[in-house]
Image (tube, rainbow, N blue to C red; front, side, top):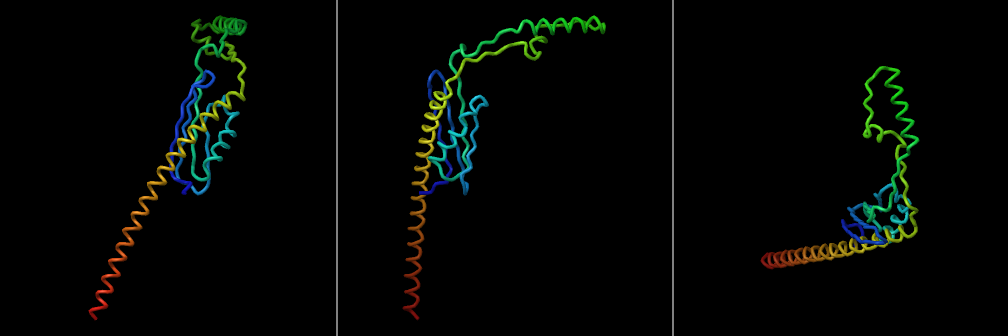
Length: 184
């Protein structure tokens, strides 16, 4: 069976309160060239995803796209760093007084300053998340493999049909050749 045909596989599943989507795409290539595209926060899983791909695909330029969306807003806690805001506010007011410039301080302006907000994310069980991601990756790879098998069968049927056409034409040439030789 040809192992480098183009292919596509997709899987989406809810696992541990997360909506995980994986797409696998490939085009022909002499060697396996696997690229995994996932959010930076999930980069710890890149090598494991590549290994899962290598277990199924031996050749091709393979792109794996993985996204994880958490359900529920309780995952992140954003708080105001009041001492930082007070420091920026005092410095900005001093700037307005010392340089005789218009004081146009707004919430919008202050919110863009570094470290005004503190973002706390809950501890993530990376092993559980990785297991969940790989489960969906393997489903996408199964779909990919099924599509590749179907494409392989179609190519095989096409080649067999063309082979039969060639044999038929060769047979006709042989009959014509024999007929011509008989009349010499």
